[in-house]
Image 1 (tube, rainbow, N blue to C red):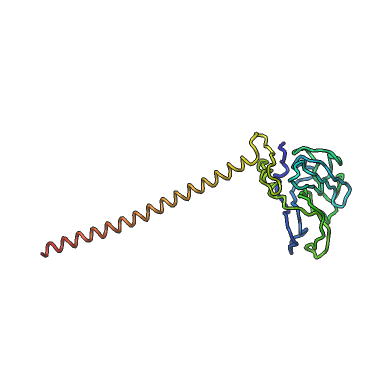
Image 2: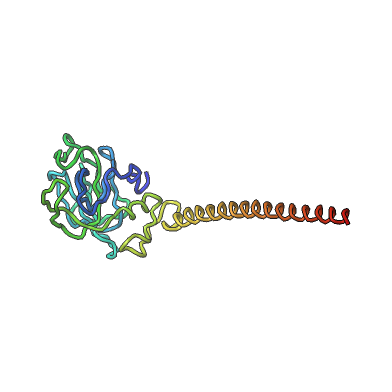
Amino acid sequence: MGLYDWLGYGISHGYYSSAVSGIGDTPHFSVDYGTPIHTPITALFSGTVVKQRTGLPWGTEVFIQPDNTRIPQYYYYHLDTLNTSLGQHVNAGDTIGLSGGQNSGGSNPTQPQYSTGPHTHVGFFNSFISVRNNYGNTETIPYGPDITPALQALAKGANVANIPNAPGVTQTQPSGIPVGTQAFFIDTGQKIGLIVVSLTLLGVGSFLLLEKQVKAVGGKVAGGVKTAAKVAVVA
């Protein structure tokens, strides 16, 4: 099992900074992953559990303060079971618990108004704020910067060195290649490929244009020779 396999399930509900008509649960300062019930959920960054509760309307919540103080606190909602305890230190990739979000059964089911099915809610956390949601009601929810870039980097192989507010993080993937390195080569290879294709097309286009011009000039020269020949005959 990889450290962040659960990120492979993909985002089922993204980050929304404001209420959007027709889209439920907005604003949404976090992301939801469509994890099946009891998928192992791991710590994104090494840190300390600073808040943890169970038996809530939304199931459970776990807040972790990263060791790297440049990374915002992050949290999970809806896990069905927890492996952690308040004050515990966890390493990146340690299992926090098993996913939930189900409306019945399990250890910590979620009430229907907080979940339409199994998933894992995860986000950066700065503070709780009051917002007007898409239904026109006021509610208090966790607020933090968009965690999506960090999760995408982790899902690719775990180089999170360039995520917002967290320069210098050195997560490493199993191959031993630093996180950003793999993404760098992938992106660079794609760019080089596009450049090569563009230069090839440009070269072909230039050749065809030059060939047309050469033929046109050749035609004019040939026409001039014929005219000169006629004039010579007449003379």
